Amino acid sequence: MTLQDREIIYRIQTLKAKWGPELMILGHHYQRHGIIQIADKIGDSFGLAKAAAESPHVKHIVFCGVRFMAESAAILCRDDQRVLHPEPEAGCPMADMAPMDSVQFAWDNLNARSDLGGRCLIPVTYMNSHAPLKGFTGANGGLVCTSSNAEKALEWAFSKGEIAFFFPDQHLGRNTGKAMGLTPEEMPVWYPSKPNGGLESLEGVKMILWNGNCPVHMKFKVRDIHFVKKNFPGSFVAVHPECEQDVVDAADAVGSTEFLAKYVRSLPEGSRVFVGTEVNMVERLRIENPKIKVELLFRSLCPTMYMVDLQKVERTLINLETEDPVPMPSEIKDPARLALERMLALQN
Image (cartoon, rainbow, N blue to C red):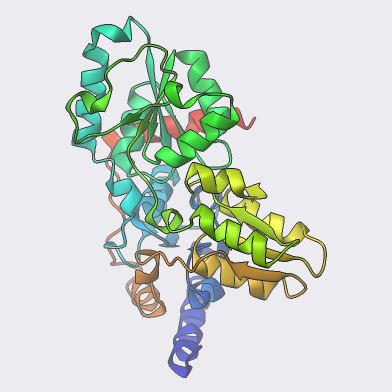
C-alpha cells in the first residue's frame, strides 16, 4: 500500500468518526485491500444490503461494489436511509446481459407460444441483476436468489409453476439444475439474438436459462484444474458456481463467495488450495489464512469492481449530505422488494 493510500485511509477514518453510527461503509469481497480496510462490513451483495437495512442507527450507506449491489441496498433500505455509490459507472457485465426490453420480449414470446400448453412460467432472478429485472420478477410471481440458495429458490419456483425462467447467469442456473437432477434437454438456453430465442420446442422443458455469464468466472477452465491435479497432487480446487459446468464438475468444492471463504478456513493446516474466483478475494484469503497455501486457479480481475477506489470513497464521504443517492422509484422498489422477501421467506 502506498503512502498516499495510507493518508487517504487516515482521512476516511476521521470522516467516519464524525458521522459515527449513522454511517456504514460496505465492502464486497471482490474489492481491493484498501477498500476492505475502511469497510464496516465485508461480505456478498445480499448479506451487505440486508445488514445495512437492519442497522437501526444507520442513515447513510456507502456501498463499495458494482451498481446492482448498491441498487439492492436501495431496494431493501428504509425510507430514512440513503444509499450512495462512490462510482456510479461501475456496472456488472453479467447484469447488463439481461436488459429489460429483451427480457420483456422473451417473456411475451414464451407466454404466447402454443407449445407452452397452459403451463406457468415463474421467473427466478439471480441477485446479480439490475433493479428493473428484480422488479419484473416480483411483479410476475417470481423471486430473487443468491448463489447459496439457488436450489431452494428453484424448488419454490417448481412448486408454483411448471417452468422456471432463470436470469441472467446461465451457468449458475445450469449447475444448480444439474445438482437437482435436471438433464441438459430440460434446461435449454434462451438466446435473445435468435428467433424465438433459438427454442424450437418447449416440450419437456423444466427451466429456461438466459444467455448470460460472468466474464470473471468464464476465465477459469477445466484445463486449469487438470494442470493443478497433475502438478500439485493432494491439493484442493474450490470454484464459484458461476463457472462453466465442466469446471464445477471437476472441482473439489463449489459455492458462493461466503462458502469459499469458509471452505478455505476449514482445511487442515498445511493444505494447498487453488481458488477459482475474483483475484482480490483470493489474495485476501491468502493473507487471512497464513497456515494454508492459498493459490489462484487463474488470475481473473473484475475491472468494474476495481473502478471503486479510496479517492472516490473519500469524495463521497466529504459530500455525504449533498451526494445524489442511488435512485429507486417505488414502481421498481416495491415489486423488487417483494421478490427479495419471497427469497427471505425460504430461509425461515
